[in-house]
Image: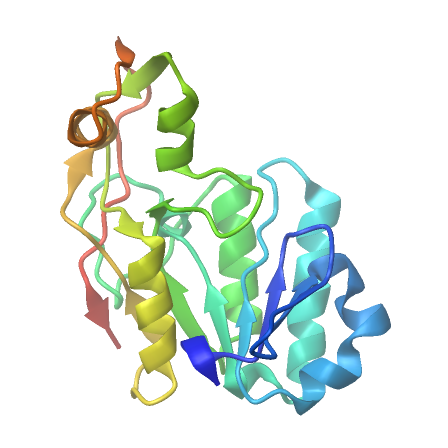
Length: 221
């Protein structure tokens, strides 16, 4: 099947069936209405995310992860995780590094990783382009006239195309945890470079917050 997967369990609000047969199912409908389809699928993407302070949704996603295990679907699932499973105090994290997040979003990702220990876990942060109604960093930059640029936080973002390529080849590769990473860069520098490359007339306000480095090293274990 094209793009290397049959079903995506996502965060969209509606079911979408593509012409090539791929089905995008919102997490809220997985168990109630689409369990049979998922059980028959050979390649599943679990792409849902929980909001940083939405405890109810985090619990629901953990229930779905447990259900995938109960239905013996974990081994054919790729869980799209995040660089935020790490606390961000050193950067350049390798796939063998132990997750140590302390904030709700990262902890939610870690909990699902632990439940889906038989699945493939793909960690990354993505700048775009967006595949749904949720804008990513590049979309936000294109519609802003003024943008707060964080100068003391680092990451290693990749494009959606790179994520799709990693998913497409994952089923034939022998790894359990994969870090997908671009060059390590400050968020401020990345935004300025993107604006310059795309001739965006954005006014940047330099901001400084809690110094963090969530950058990853491309690696597999």
